[in-house]
Length: 116
Image (cartoon, rainbow, N blue to C red; front, side, top):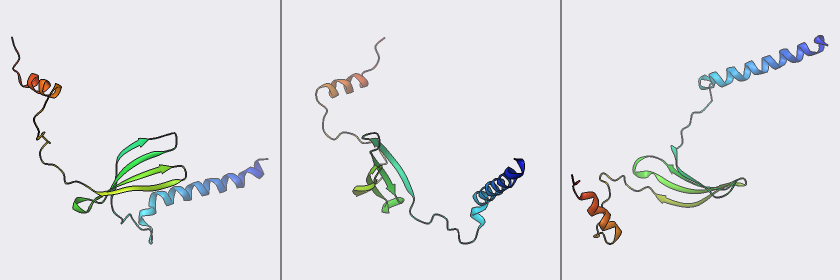
């Protein structure tokens, strides 16, 4: 029994060793290209169902970057919308209109000094 299993075990060990060596040294192999495309960054994900999601992805860096809204399902990926990325804001946004109602009371409460 061991006579029949030994060649199969040796072959399995050789195959695992070759796979490990290729995985470890693939950067040094000639003809293996590195990623040269635009950089991608997932901005947000929203699950719609067990296998459906809406994903927003930033493609590129700087002024030329684009935001893609993608529909992802088990059947594939569909581009839903494409828009340019907004410029990064240096200052936090402040409301231009005067606050009314509850928002005004809350802002007034936050600005009031603490009473002893």
